[in-house]
Length: 270
Figure 1: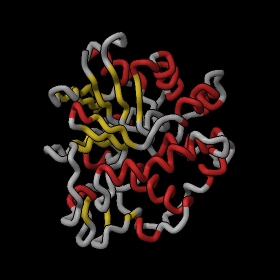
Figure 2: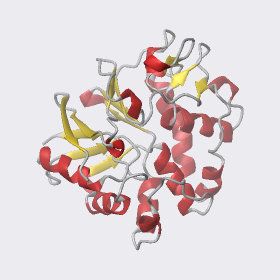
Figure 3: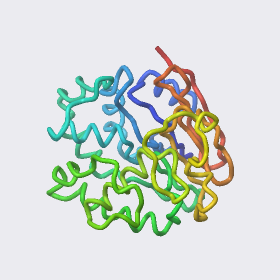
């Protein structure tokens, strides 16, 4: 029996199947946690979701930015992005089941027994674990409520960039979604930066990767995250573990076994 966290699949179903074979995944005893962005840019988002829905008892996930945008598209709030390849899923017979499954997914999963906190992009440096999880209850309640479509429509936008500026439920929810699903860099005052996506060696101070900010509050878990393909897994310490290794861009699909932090990687499968 083992628990694995998987980096951004992004609709690369063939690569996911290769990874499942590599870890000899047993849905009767193992558990798979996706670190967000299961779908969007890869060749078979429908295949990924069909597999997930068929193995729900052995699968969980945190929401990523592409997952949330897909919910907005499915709800009629937005159009698919130019590079998204989700038409087959949007017109499939499993769309309603997909939406229902996504809506119950949280923005963070706490695994105290394995000393792990899983989130798509990261933990805003001004939050400790308890503050983060307490704050995220608001987003989960909104996405699982009868008014979830209206709540989802408020998530778009870059402000507020700092938690202290979030003066309403809509603003708090937007900040939390941005921090947990879009964040890479922060300003010296911990404000979120949405302009830069490059690897850290190409971004000048005073911007800092969220996990490197000197004022970052201590987290009593290893934060396991995806999202940052240009980082390519180059943050793996006792404090953080990066899993997005750019599978959809021709890189690798990476998983970590939580029991012993053993890493498993498979190349992108065409």
